[in-house]
Image (cartoon, each protein chain N blue to C red):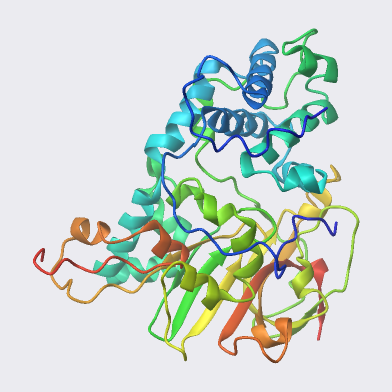
Length: 218
Length: 215
């Protein structure tokens, strides 16, 4: 979806404030939101792409609050959307009826190893790769109303395949609960002037990871 | 469902009214209560997750990987070939998650990492991302005017150097391997790791210069 989250190339957010002071979590609730969210992923309540899509679907005025505030807003909505709690329970602040059995069971201290390491998103190859290193490709001019990981700023532009990463879980379908549908994943490199015009920094190269359905031969 | 009146309050640092929970804190407390009551999570495990990211996983892991790459050419090559595999011994519990890619800075090429679509970041080797990495200003601008953004970090690159920005749009994660500072010949891995900053492994900084009398 062409949402507020797709920020590459936008103007108006001002300078970056590089100062980073203070602890990992600036408020205790931020750590709690992070931990509770990670647990719901670990027990299989929703997958990482459904989680990202949940944040993208927030109204822009909520998206533009803060990082962990977004997580909180997403969390409340996802609990209801995936059947792990009801809105009246969230309003009441406690459980009013038995919970759903999570696909991977309750998260206990014994499962702590599952947090702190990224999962694997590689899957067996389902077909030969359509593109090879060095191929010129065009990022499709596509505007799905649902989740995608092709940023707007590369759509319609020609780039060069730099690396193949094998077949990976395809976010565009997993976010919708329609299965992993593994697709070839490529690093595609673009020239800065192709993306941003003739006045752009001539030394700039930008790459994205692009799934095969995002690409056509150029 | 959501009041929209406290967005700007959570960065306040007035802890004088600690007994009064904010609306946000109450909402978070409600969610955790529901998760525990419904049997989705053991509260001790939730605390342990927070502790893991506060104390165990952080940029010290990445710094040790970089220092090893600076001192061991075989390791450096292995890291550039398959970073998840090569760096595993340095990871929390001896493991690094999949799809980590190390990209090497040279005098002619400077790498910078971003996630324009959310805030994807190599948690396994750098811990949780800093606030600026998640900021709208960084995410929107670094793919378009990286030299201006790097300037805001106090970093100026040679005019001719290629600036390569890696937008983490899938489940591949990037670790920048910065250039080893000169004047560090003969330094131990541990000494070198002390020069490696988090920002230098994201590409918005360079390692600290040696103090001169430390070698």
